[in-house]
Structure formats: structure tokens, C-alpha cells
Length: 202
Image (cartoon, rainbow, N blue to C red):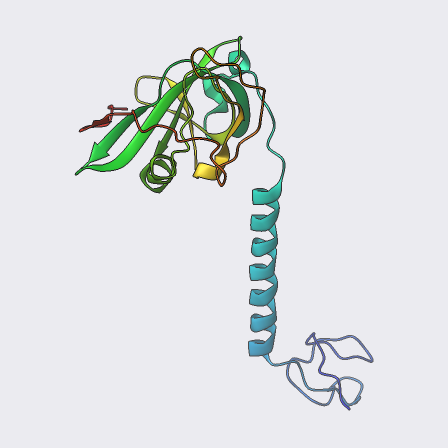
């Protein structure tokens, strides 16, 4: 079986012969070149496979944890993980009676950072009663953004990016620390939150 050659050179004298099947210099028989279309398909397949691998690695890598006090505007667009306590009840904004934007402030003792979610992530948080309560200790994965006023916010891509590590105990009761996740809310949450007609301006 003749194996197509990958180059336009003669296999004997290594001179360029193009698509010719007989070398004009040494007379050696040359195998036909591999079809250009086949090479293009192979290159495209390798490129798509490489991009898919990069996408998988980027979305499964462990995010770096950061102290809020160490976050600077130069870190805008970075994906990080922050752990802290919720300072006040989350705020919910709606559009045509549908939750469209949620926000709450998070503190880890070194500073305060606004955490927000919009559109599908906001609707999932509200519908699943997954928003934290005041005093909850939470862990958040998100992307830092810088608004028009120069303020940093951490945006959640999905409801799963918010994890409650230690719920705040109800008033007058004692609750042992527990872990709740987006798929298993430990108690009915956020039913008290009002829906405001407009979201804040960036």
C-alpha cells in the first residue's frame, strides 16, 4: 500500500518536485501527495479538540481564594473565590414581576464586597430560595467587574456558585453549623424579600 507523502519533496534526493510522481532530478518514483482537503480537515479537528480541552480545563480548575481587602481594580475580570458573612438581607430587583437582579454585601473581616447575579442566575436563586440570609457564612465563586463608578462587584455565573457554609441561627434558637448547597436548601429562604421594579444603575 502506497503511503501518501506529506511534503512536495522527492523522497530520494529531497529536492522540490511538487505534485509530480517521478522526480525530474534523480528519476525516482514518488508516492502521491496527501490530498490537501484531508490535511485541512485534520488541522481543523486538532484545533477544535484543543479548544474543547482548554474549555474543560478552565471550567474545572480550582479557583484561587482571595481576601476582600486584597482585591484591587487591577483584578477586574478575574475569576476568584471569596468566603465571608452576609451583612444584610439580599436585595432583589424585578422586571415585569420576574426577578432580574439580586445583590448583597459580603464581609470577611478585611473588607466589604458587593456580590450580584443577574438574569438566569438571579431567577434560579430566587425561585429555589437559595439566597443567603443576613449573618450566613457563604462561599462565592464569580467574576470581578468594575462598574462605571469604579466600584468592584463579584458576579455569579450560576446559582451553584453560591454555597452556604454556616447558616445564621434563627432568632432565639441555637443551631449547629451545617453545610447547604444549591440543590438542597435546608429551610425555606427568602420568602420575605420584596421585589423592586428597577435594578441599580452601574
